[in-house]
Image 1 (spheres, helix red, strand yellow):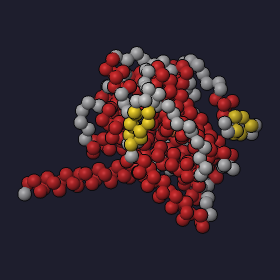
Image 2 (image 1 turned 90 degrees about the vertical axis):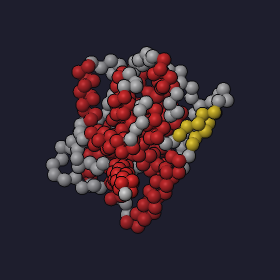
Image 3 (image 1 turned 180 degrees about the vertical axis):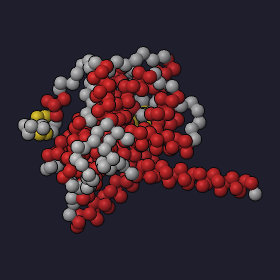
Length: 335
Ligand SMILES: [Fe+2]
Ligand SMILES: [Fe+2]
């Protein structure tokens, strides 16, 4: 695990920093920690220029100070009625979800290793640690409810650490935007017990912090890059986006130790939306819900920190397109 410098300048491993997570925090502490994980403002007055030292400090401080110290090993998993249990165990997402967290941890940790700046390295190392905790939460849930998983493929250290970090970062930006909406949909539809929703709520908010960090790292990285490196970097960003599109359109097949084929869809939104509710979901309503949830989850963080723009922009564009298409078809039908 990466070494990071603690606030007093001494060397501490992330494992040291997080090895004293409380077993049973009081309700008051839980409330306070939850509030602090969702609200953060830099004490710096005035505008914060993307790429500046103040910007870098704000991004790293935000990430460190909004840490939520929950411990996966003490999460109480609720008893589920047979229908709910079946609904959860048959969701075709568990293999991908566990592996995605594992890959994210490895890629973030690998990228953190090559960063010289201690603040940026610290923030990305912490992000890697949190991805590992997500994996632990999921693994414990899968074990508790006996969800059959395909064996995890070996996690390989990426050779191109910047590319791997960009893939993970952009992928989290897209997936989290839709996951925010789907999570709210699941809550509204009452298809899962509230205890389970409550358990995953901090995980959702953590993804919001992760993509807030990524969006700000991207702006900081761009601003501090020599001009001659920019064209190649932007070409890589476009390459990453095409790669993610290709990945989401393809199915993932794997076999478990009983020889049973697991076909999983990288397209969380479509698969997830179908599983989260019994009712038909209107595309425009779902996208509007994603936008509202996205806004709500980011609302507590310093407005001078940049937000991921791409997924909300694409959602607004798609809503506009669908509405226009419906109006056009309505006019045609009326003629
Ligand atoms: Fe995660
Ligand atoms: Fe994440």
